[in-house]
Length: 380
Image 1 (cartoon, rainbow, N blue to C red):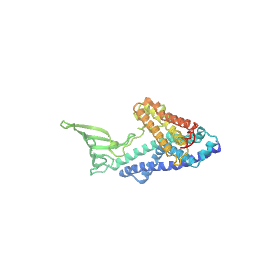
Image 2 (cartoon, one colour; image 1 turned 60 degrees about the vertical axis):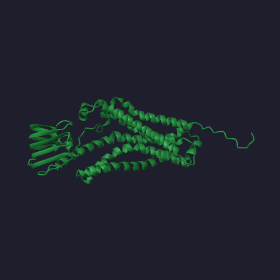
Image 3 (cartoon, helix red, strand yellow; image 1 turned 45 degrees about the horizontal axis):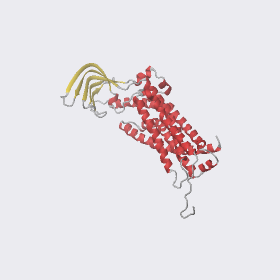
Image 4 (cartoon, rainbow, N blue to C red; image 1 turned 180 degrees about the vertical axis):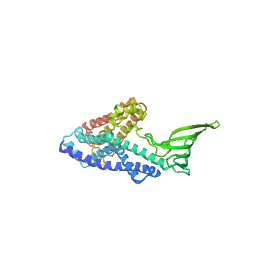
C-alpha cells in the first residue's frame, strides 16, 4: 500500500473505532435494560445479569459493525473533502476507482471481524447463553417449591404444594394452567417429583387427576377428567425462564449447518434445507461490511464543490444503505419461508456492488462545462 492508501485507511479506522463504540454502547444498553428487568424479576443476582449481558455482546457487535463501517467511511470521506485533500488527490491524477482502494481494504478488514464473530464467537456465546438459561429455569422452578402457600410462577399459572417430604417428594400437589382461557387445565396428584432433563425441568406425578375445561364461542363449556397412575408433564414453559438447550440452529457451528446430521435435525426439529439456509445467511452477513464502507465513500464523490457541504450526497448514501438492508430483510424473510431459495441471501451484496460500480463510474466521467451565457447588452 502507498502512503496515501495508509493515510486514508488510518482515517477510516480511527472514525470506525469511535462509531463502533457509540453504536454498540447504545444498542447493547437498550438490550441489557430489558434483560436486566427480566432477570431481576426472576430473583437473579447482579452477577448473573452481568454474565447474560456479556454473552449477548457478540451478537450486538456483529449487527452493528457494518453500520459503523458505513458511518466511518462517510464521515472520513466528508472530512477529506472538506479539507480539500480529495481535490489534491484528483489533481494528482488519482481516479475514483483508485481512491476507492483504501475504502475497499477497510471494508474487508471489517468483514473479517464480522466473519470471526458470526462463525465463531456468536455461536459459542449463544450456546453458553442457552445453557445458562436452562440452569436458571431449573433454579427458578426450585424457588417456587415451597409448601403450604399458593404461588404464581407466571401469568395464569397457580401452584400449591401441601408438604415436601425429606426425600424431595411433593405431597398433595395442585397445579392450574389457565394461560389459555379457551382451555384451562388443573393437575392434582397425591405425590410428585421434579426431574431434571436436557429439555428442562419435568414434573412426574403419581395417583392423580387431570381436569380440562374447554370453552368455545356459542357452545356450552365442556369439562373432561382423566385419572392417572403416573404422568410426566413438562413444566419448563410454565415458568418465566423456561429455556432449552440445543433447540436453535443459531447455536451450532457453520460447518455443521452446511452438512447437518440426524442428531442436529432431531434436536432442532428443522429440515436440512433450513440448516443450510442458516449457514448461508452467516456467510452472506460479512459481505455487507465492504458494501457499506464503499457506499459511504463512493456516494460522497458525486457532485462538485459546494459551500453548503455534501449533505445531498450523504442523504443518497443513507438511502442506498437502507435499500441494501431492505433487500437483506426481504431475502431473510423469504428464505425463512422457503429455505431452498437461500441464493437470495447474496442478492443484497450484489445489488450494493452494482450501486457502487455505477457510482464510481459516474464520478470518473469527465464533467462537461456549461457554455457561458452572453452578458446583457453585449455585442453579438
